[in-house]
Image (cartoon, rainbow, N blue to C red; front, side, top):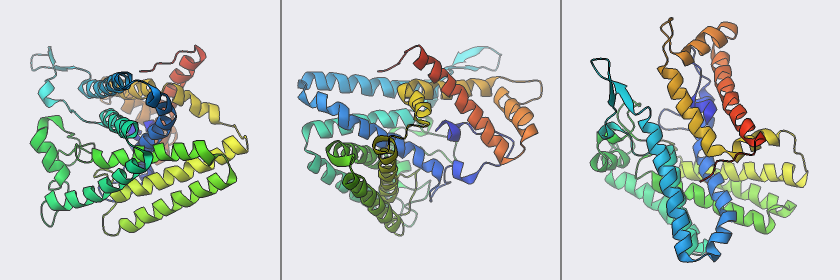
Amino acid sequence: MILVNTPGTGAKLYPYLVHADWLGFTLADLVFPSFLFAMGNAMSFSMNKLKDAPTSLFWRKVIKRTVIIFLLGYLMYWFPFFSMDTNGGLELKPISETRILGVLQRIAICYFITSVLFYYLKEKIVFIVALIVLMAYWQILYLFGQTGSELEMATNAITRLDLFILGEGHIYKKDSIPFDPEGILSTLPSIVNVVGGYIAGKFIQQKGKSFQGISQLLIIGFLLSALGLWWDLVFPMSKKLWTSSFVLYTVGIDISILAVLIYFIEMKNIKTGTEFFNVFGKNPLFIYLFSELFYIILRMIPTSSGLDAFEWVSERVFQEVFPGSFGALLTAIAFMMLCWSLGWYLDKKRIYIKI
């Protein structure tokens, strides 16, 4: 996510590290659904304790975590909270122009709904609910979008609902037109990515660490991805719309990746390189917030060259040595390693920031 969100400037980017403009799929599009899948996978372990806890404790923990994650996301989009007025003074950025939904907000909502579903319903029932959601979402987009332009950015049901409920001031404005890729309606199918991760986690706990379990995971992953590609023929894949075909395709890929990781790390005991990723995993929310806020700060710092601080490093340092797409990628890698170094330091000091 850091590599995708903080690419170098001054050169064309590698297409697989850029989100699809609208319809279609790139490697970058796999990142966010994989976050949701991983969260669901982790929940399959943590929910074992919550299911045995009193109802009051369950609701207290889930609501607290949901609210904190949502607020962190909201405050991140409001940052730096102040802007320069016409007289050169500082004024508070208006809340009326602050985006309400976003990445962390979607994670919070998906966490809340998935927790409630698995706390009160059996896994088979939740699985059926997930299928109904995917089918219903398909119908909703075509029923409530503008006839003939149901999947266009300006006329789809997601845009219409967001503008009606949130208003233009509270949605994402950095696309060709105001459109929120983490909109209200498109959050519904994203819940299925979490459900997929949860069910995969439960399966792994039962028989995932065996050759039979690995084989079954790979078969399921292949079938889901193939079904997603087939559905793409009539309901095109799109991360921004979070279409049902996109859900099946990404869940299938994530299940397959998970099966391969279990085979090499758990069964073959090949641990080389895993500690690098564990550093991110031990303080993921803090590192993500740092990467976003520090990037915003760098883009606000001017230099004598007319470039901001981030652009200067990318174009005057990396692009000078490695011009073109590779230099832009190295800029993103360097920024990612800076974030990793912070995580490594926290891990070394045994500081783990959790909610």
